[in-house]
Image (cartoon, rainbow, N blue to C red; front, side):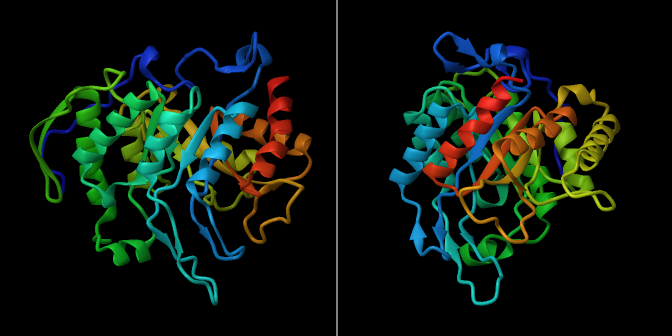
Amino acid sequence: MVQGPLLPVVVVPTEERPHESLGWPRTQVSEGMTRSDCGRPLRVGLFLTPMENQASGTTTRWRDVLAMAKRAEAVGFDSLWLPDHLIVQWGWEGSEPEGVWEGFSLLAALAAVTERVELGTLVACTGFRNPALLAKMADTIDEISGGRVVLGIGAGWHEPEFRAFGYPFDHRVSRFDEAVTIIHGLLKQGQMTFNGRYYQVRDCELRPRGPRQQGPPVLIGGSGPRMLGLAARYADIWNRDFDVWNPGVTLYSEEDLRAWKLRIDAACVQQGRDPATLSRTAGVLVDMPIAPRREGWNALAGSPEEVAEGLRGYARAGFTHVQIWLEPSTLEGVEAFAEVLELLDHD
């Protein structure tokens, strides 16, 4: 049970909220042309995969992450997103654990070497770090980036990494409830006292503050009733994960996407919040024709025109931003996807 004051939802002023939903000027596609001129129906981010790949026997190095980020920014992606795993055990027969570079270290590095793209975690597990420290880390990296960070957070789900690194796996949503209370309070108000079952802060203050008075926007990922409720209460942005859908409808169809809208709208109403004040984003698997399809991953695939039309479906369903997990997750994949961005720019 959460102990301490319950915080109201804070609607962040337009000039301090993330680009995709909050009226910030569009970033440049080419000299003299902006995306508002081109008519891109939603913002498009790239999900980076800084980890070992058992299938190929390769490990993504920092130089690879840097090259992908630079090229993605150059071809017109709106944002870059990093996972927050410590190790991944897929559970396939014969599979071995795959290591992942620490997400916030990479986020800070990307903040220093990119210029215009938003930078986010998709999503950071609050069980891996003290929530007050996590808020301070996010505000610091927002300072490095000049106000381009989105703090994506969730409760975590992959038990092997909790066990391997010694973090408790029980009561994850209850722990997240307390963590987001602290994170939200510190970022939006600058100071916090909270006495919970799992976390406590006393006269804690964020100093100095980053470039935005209320800190980076908070994105919450989750699909269960409690997590949707917490997103409706605390988040600036809600994210639908890559691999979740509603039963009884066609996977990733517009009917499925509209069903998500109804669910998150209902959660907002239950919290006494105007649903229009909560932005909606979605992770989207995309397999480009230059590589074999991922078996069993239900990815969006086809020609650039078909992929672009699939993404337009997200915009029609009320999503304002998508995070693309490409196959192949390489420079060649980024180059191939550039044609999709060009098609969207001319809508």
